[in-house]
Length: 532
Image (cartoon, rainbow, N blue to C red; front, side, top):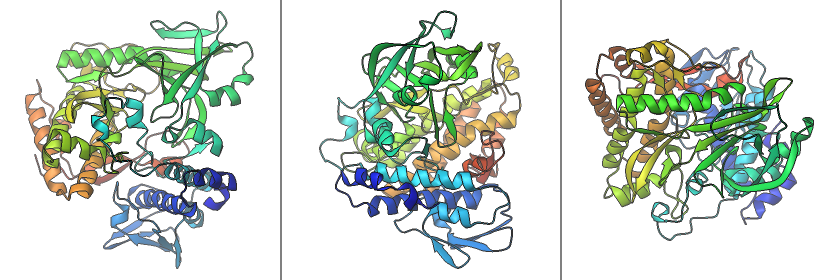
């Protein structure tokens, strides 16, 4: 079950095409995934782990009393794992996350996650091996020809906390190289004609013409007779999510296609609820943002469609059409990624170009751009899942210009809160509706504060040595000012944000749960505690 099995000679050949020794990217990929797993063992509610001791070394005790030990610093969120990083269990040092997990005596089945970790290591090794060294030249952010896809494809390592950061179960090494954004491909999206009476469309301008990802075309499409290939293929560039692409002939839109491949935590199809919710919920978010004065641009899902199979929308044959940013924008995750110019985080380019080299000024402005709209929308009843992939900032010469948001699949909406603003939500499908304030707060705070902003804090600490307390003080100042300007009391939200603990999604515990798609949360010491 070790990564050697997944890292086949075929995969090795792909790595050597960029003149890097195979063992280097494999070794660093193992360390990176093991670091994410070690962090999960340290903080997540994984069954059977009942005692943890934090000193210079962290000790995680298994159900049978045997300890797993490793450096506590390496278990911190967003901590980089050095090449050769190991964790010790039962007197043996493990450098391979799959072997470690297979050896742990947990009271749940781990075989599936072991395979996912293997696959994640293999694909991360392929991704790292494919990256050329920094090329020099002008900063990436100052290049007028750089597109959103270019910035998104800088995110080589995937999810910064998830051990399955590069899992693509079902894709071969050649397919990963052909379709994954970190390999910088152009993919041909097949346009398929849907027969009359077999098409469910929402929004505007969605004829019965389904854009099909080439992996889906080759592996899934022939299971569904009656669909007709038009012979038209549209070149597109994959964005960070792989199945979401930017069609080159239409720069004003993106397509979220269905791909029956497990990537990180889920098989990335497009559910019937997503098809029905997308345009209406996008419009709702945009309308509430306008009513509340929240400074955020909603990249709306203007249309969606699905093929009907046995009278029901088929999640494997569906698509959502989303607005693309009209001006230069970059996801927060990309700001933490290395620049192709010099290897520094892209945030460092923004700091140099737009903030006279001052990381605190940059981060203070980032908080001012990001937090007030998100907290205002939460107050109004819309909790966005504003993690680093969904949340973008506009840029002009390195200066941040505004906040953009995409993908309404993970939002939570409170009809009772919306009513206080005089807004009735549209019909909501799936699990978007909730009046539970804990659900709403947890959804936003885990993604935006413990996730996206915390990653920026870690990046600035590593790149500049900026004290983390100084950066978190900027978060606190912006949040306090925002809550004091809201039109009526938001005491409960404020108390939760400044409480003793912050939530973060427990992605590994979810992979081991009976329902791996149900949210599970871990709770971290809150750096905002006591700063109100």
